Length: 298
Image (cartoon, rainbow, N blue to C red; front, side, top):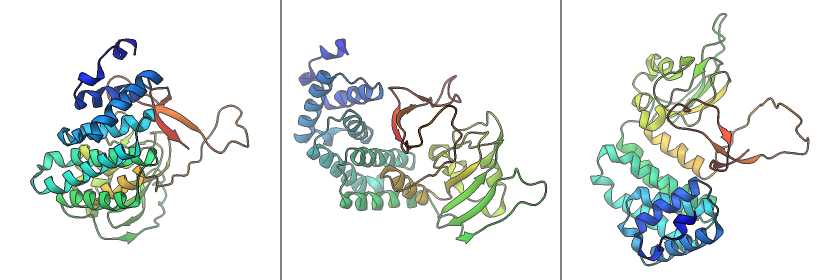
C-alpha cells in the first residue's frame, strides 16, 4: 500500500483505477488514506461520465470495490447502474453468445454491490430482472415442465439423490453424503451429481447441466461428506433469475450444523470474511475465514 500510495491517481485512466480498486478490496487493504483518495478519484471520474468508456467487467469491478471498501457515493452507484443496464439493452441483439455470460455477470456484480452498499432502488431491480431474463432467453429453451415430487427411496437407494420439486425451470434436489456438486469440471472425490441428473430421461435435454460457465445450473454447493437440499436451475433463464435473487438477498438458506467448542446460546449471527480458492492446488481445500475473504453473514 505504501508503494501504491505514491502513484499519482489523477494521471491514471479510470480502467486502471478500477483494477486498483478491485485489487485493494480483494486484499482487504483498508488503508484509510489510500482508500479515501482512490474513492474520491473514482467517484469524480464517474461523475464526469468516464464510465461510458469502460468494459462491463470494469464497471462491475468499480461497484464491487467501492462497496467492499465503503468508498462509494450514491450518485456513483446510480451512474454505474444506469450505464450497465442501458448498455446491456442496447447491445443485447448484437452480443455474441460467448459474451452473454460476461454481460450478465457484470449486471449481477453491480446489483450485488449496490445492494451491499444499500444503494439499490426497486426500479433498478426491476430493470435488471428484465435484462437478465432476456439474456437467459437468448441461451435457449426453458427447462422441463413443472412437477411436484416427494419420492421416497426404496431399500438400498438411501444414498441416491432425490428430486423433491421442480417448477418453472427450478429444481430442489436432496444430496446425500458421498456426492460431489461438480459445478466446476472434473469430479475430484465422490460421485458426480450432474452426471446422475443428466442420466434421467426427462432432464437429459437440459443443456445447462453441461455448461460449466453457468456452473451446470447449481446455485450453491455442499461439501461431499454433507447432505442437504440443493437449489438448481434447469434453464439459463431460471439461472439468472435465481442469481438475481441471491444478489439482492431474497434467497434464505437454513443449515443444521455441528459446532466444535462452546457457542454462546445468545449468538444468532455469524459475520466473517470467507475465503476459498477457485483453482490451483488449494481449489478443493475447505474455505477459511481470512481478511481477504468475501463478506458473509449467517
